[in-house]
Image (cartoon, rainbow, N blue to C red):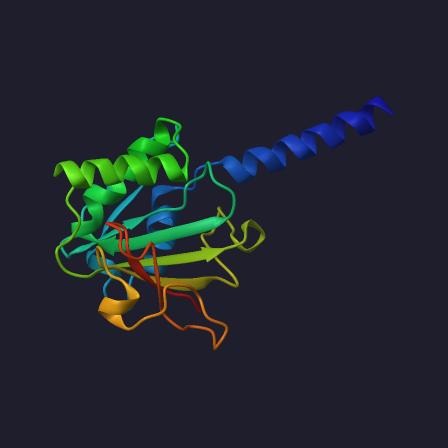
Length: 194
């Protein structure tokens, strides 16, 4: 009985370790680039995680896109690529989350910074691409992802339904219908879900 219990605990602990293990830099780069627009991935800058789960530069790119590898501390698989003009906004979010802030607190702190002029949002529309899947569909050892989906986001500060003609909430009229989230705020963005 003790042997069976020990084997069960070892199996559970191994599964927990495997889920939280950080993939190699090559796999992180490979999977981060799943979010990049087709034909643009080779030139993207890629950030990911060290073996100690520190956020680090994995690959310096030459184009305008920055890609982020899957966070080994978060459930599910999610990678992103975004225009470099969004980096101050994205970086501030990472730093505030590291301080333990929740989504509402992060929104409010960024808003204060934007209003104070210490955080600049892009002056023109800027794209974000997010590729996601369930944990069970991501193999951390090979970098293979099954059943993933791509979501498109276009940041356009202070946009509203009136300024764009888009609805300000998702509609039931069909998948993929764009809408504006956080309309009228510094964080306004057009959501396009598959």
